[in-house]
Image 1 (cartoon, rainbow over the protein chains, first blue to last red):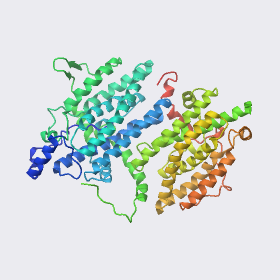
Image 2 (cartoon, chains in turn green, yellow):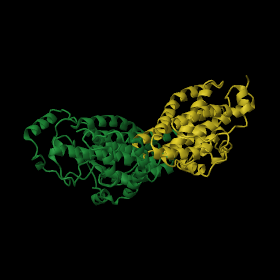
Image 3 (cartoon, rainbow over the protein chains, first blue to last red):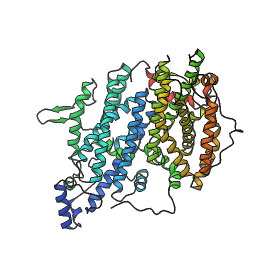
Image 4 (spheres, chains in turn red, orange):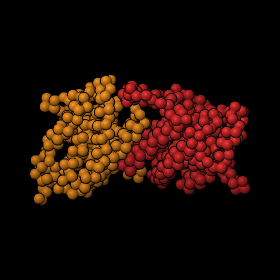
Length: 330
Length: 255
């Protein structure tokens, strides 16, 4: 999982952001990106490019860490050795992705400590999808399959972006995610083809998760303030609607194949346009959840805060007062 | 030599207590996922948890070959009094110092236990013991590094020292002798809990002292026995209730 990296509607960017940049350096920077070059930490980059990337990578890292919580709950409940071992390994991977991404973001000059602090004070965001509860075992299966699938759609696109450290982290992450997807799919198949109780459980989970999954890719393009600059700089690699459409195209048929239903009677593919049509999910709910009013926002942050507080003495003991700490690169 | 019924019973008892120890400590260590003091420790505890649960599975497989139920049934349908784990492993994870000290004591014991079992006459057990040694080496290395490192800071050292004192009777409880000690030794299956305890003390006491900690006198401490005979703290049954929550919805279903 887990990061989505959609275009944030509140993230207003205009072309004036480049007004204060050296036009020669900017032109050189943009021509390198156009030629498919990767930008590395010590290279010149516009201030806004750096800012947007830090925001995006940091948000992705936080999503991995917070995302470990709803799934982690089910490690101790996983039915049988096979699932228990697989889920442990999966969630461990996610935490590892967080570590990898914090390191990638650090190359842009923000320390892991500062990012963690912004997470627990609510200043930085993480994927909205983790503000919903994982109520049953089937929820953990649906998350592992479909949320991870959604994340792969986004991350594969973003791995073709312009910032070297982020792209390399995403390449590694996507390779691991493909195993998670297999695990999640296998898990859902067992439930969907299992006993009536198992079947009902997975259908119920799917019904509850459908809206958060549709939200996952971000608001429709007509509503989001889209930045051509971010696209040109290859920070953002595709529109929210394109990503959502790609996901629907790949996964709705698989869901239907299992005899499961989705709670949207209007969901269908328009064969003429090749695009999926659906009832717009409630974007007011999305905004509410992003702004801290989802079912689990408070709980997730409280858990993270407690973990930070409980671990403070350990981190303090590791810091050697005689050693000088430097801010990361860039 | 030909195994008598008592030898087989002793072997099963030995396998059950090792497997139960590993399953329960693995389960406990996995509770750190997402909550560690630093990300790297989340990852480390999760990694060790996977090894432990995997090792328990291998031992339950041997038990299955000896006629016991399959591993899922054995692990996910028994109640606390049917478990043979030591009380040490079932205690809640507490704060990081508790989990670290438990991990240090447990893994040094297990490293020596599987070293001893690498020459057992029971071939499948010998094979897994040799395999496990390669994994446990990293677990003890991890525990040693952290115990040493935290001993270098006054506040952390005090916390760890208090925890050592608190955990030590439970750690000694790991070596509760079984009723089959004589048979196991006689048949060349296992050299026994007493021999293991001596080797363990010879390892952990000097090591802890070299990190600057003091170790309670093992001769004057009353060990927390009972776990090997199904007498557990109040913490085991809730752990098992949680662990089997989904499995119990329909034990006949394939999950």
